[in-house]
Image 1 (cartoon, rainbow, N blue to C red):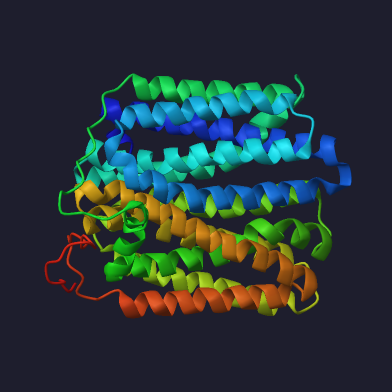
Image 2 (spheres, rainbow, N blue to C red):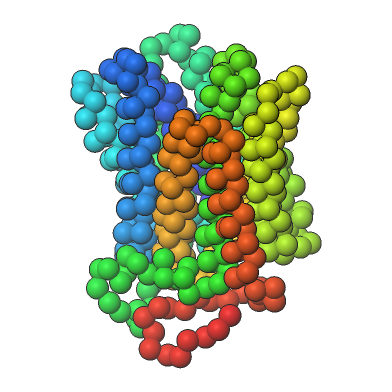
Length: 421
């Protein structure tokens, strides 16, 4: 897997991604402490609103940037977004009102919504061989999982020496370092938009979404994203209540449960490159969606009975399976996009994937929390299992078995006859 790091351009970009992720993790911890200082017992409400703002920024900004990304030099765009994020992070320690938190979080997440799809669309050009690109996708998945485990530990160590306000400074340094690494390499020039693509601003902004609707396996990918969001929302939203209230365990066990989810994801990401060398994406991704459904269904049944000594190891095993199944779906998604659209359409496709995926989370996050609070954990898990099952069945039905290895999705504005896939 690490052989792709021999490519100097990718090595610098991957290092930029890792450093920026660590900075983001530090900011998450610092923002939680800042919210507690400002709002006290209402800190959860502040953070909940900030999370909603994050999702709104992701859903609203990414397709706009994707529509015009071909007009901006890729390196300039990435560095500008890193500088924006560094500036916002430096401002956070000096705010005094909750509404200022919301404004700065919105600006920070808008910059991230512009950076991430553009970054993702660059990697296929840097690593044109599919074997190398598959390994890069696994490394990226590992980076996200390791960040979720490493950043809180690093923040805890730093907080024993400095105040949390200095974590924002660390975040800013991380984004500046990311920008410096991007500057240090030459990036491919964005492929010009085909001359036959016409239409106004709305047509350009919605183009990526229409690529998904025009391509069966991309529609299936969207359904699979919904299945991942159903399983992930159960873990992220309800783990703390399950561990602390339902099982009566310690704060440290909350970290262990979340770590089990991340560990399952990392193991799957490590194994996937060799598996995908032998079998197709459809063969591994569709069964993973049914695994998500099965784990959520089993958990719903288990949560309805009085917990015993078996409950804790079963929870850890279930969360590990959810993490592994989610990684099996998420890791190959870049391969599907790359093989389904033209080079000119990659930025729009990645932006659409970014937006639609986070739209799924915007649906499942509040559903998981509200149902757990009002109807109980068994009902919440059962509802999410139904969503995952519907998504898995839909993906299986619309993803053709004889799907060709490479297709170029339609330019939705072309007057030429529609092709079938």
